[in-house]
Image 1: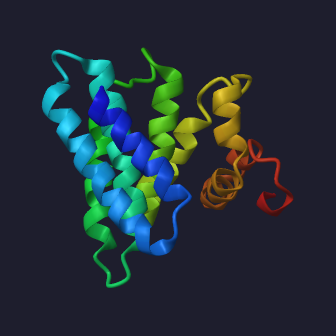
Image 2 (image 1 turned 90 degrees about the vertical axis):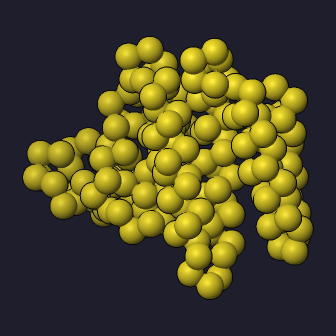
Image 3 (image 1 turned 45 degrees about the vertical axis):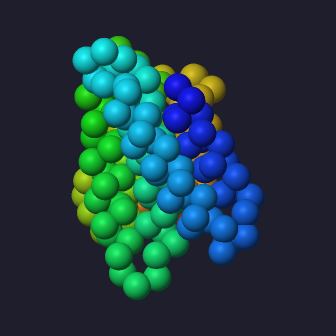
Length: 170
């Protein structure tokens, strides 16, 4: 638990740090999450393991966005792997809120990698969860999510566009 919390604290600090410190803090967060995964296993602590996998994915996604020389895809690929691992436990049936959160994160990582069809499927999956749930509603209302969802839905049959209420989607 300590290593996961350390990773989260480092990642939060990175969000407020200057550019020079961000890479160092994210590298430390990634190392902390990986250390936590040596203790948390899917078999013995599945919830903690899935949370840590999701957190690791977030740190890797952020780190990949900072890389200038094209190596971002290495981090994004690792992030995708971590999110898929988290989804082994965070299923739609058992943990719908966490499943939607991880689907959203996975969609961002796939989008960063340029895997648009797979990213679209993840963003659309978030729409499957109860729209009255405040946690999921927050994901659905984020500008990033709404714009990306509508852009992807634009390429689907017109019937699917009815789910989007942004004028540019119609």
